[in-house]
Image 1: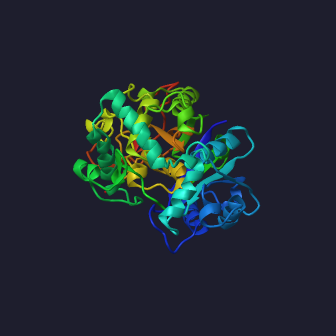
Image 2 (image 1 turned 60 degrees about the vertical axis):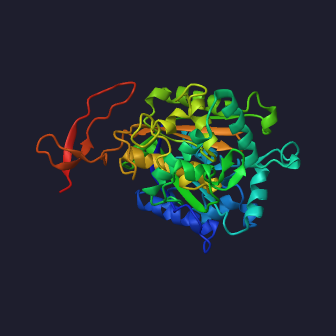
Image 3 (image 1 turned 45 degrees about the vertical axis):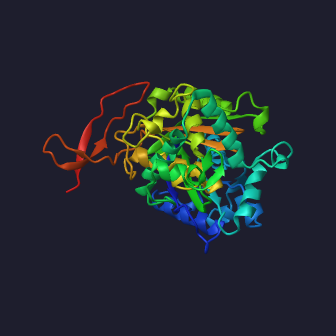
Length: 428
């Protein structure tokens, strides 16, 4: 049984001081329902990714709360917490529910409110994702942990400080055109390097911000999509998950992320693709070093070569392997529980051909979401759905040279390539 994405939507990421988690999640859900013929009454289950609801908003039991607020009071519901990978884990659980035959329609949502309290409280809440005995009690924070990873990587591979900064420059540039992004301003390498020190070598602009936001993806079974004539633009080709020691000190290495390597290997195998097949990716860049390590864990680059991506423009929107065309966590924002679902939203737009930083002919996309400093990781691979009867990529029709949207009558798959027959829908 296959799993299709019927629709996916997000609120803006940033500061929402006059809102709440339930209001943000409801807003994202309304947007998602507006893009599909599915109604709340069709939902078999509601899965919600959230990390800090009980710590910031004093609100637990979020699964049932959100199911009620999206109009699915009688659906099965659960809140899924896995630190910063809460959203990615939620999406994977939704897919597994569909693949197992337990559900036909699942709303996978993620939400976080972080800006309604002071930064000290947020820092303390985030610290719950670290090892309390061996990291928190020793004074380590997540910026400090990632700084250790960055310094070791720089030492091993003779990497310059400016190489890390190039990741931030790229992702802020991508965020400029994304209406959902928190920071829509370009930065220079110098501005990143000279921004406020956080934990050497990490500075303020090497780090993702504190954010509020919500994202929703509605997934359906292949059978449900066919029986109801749904036009689904994206399908789940495969997922992979893996874990590692919670404390950085207990891992085999601190200049790589083994859990991400294993999750990627499993996702590639399940999807029957390789890293070379990926057209666009959203990876977990909570700090600049995190994107570099992700590129290597996902086999986009060999060990020690991940800095090439941003430095040489290969991971720019028009590069060889576009990464974080949304702006990533650094530019778009990081409302923890929503981030993994937000990546799915961005990649669904890419596969639909309607992303503000559209990658030409994107057909296979990858999402990489991380919890803590790499103790848990999900990798999800999406492809253009066979039910995408209208692909919204604007092209010049060869017959008369007019702007058009191609309408697919046949779809290529990796197992059975076929020619794609098109008829044109005029745009002028």
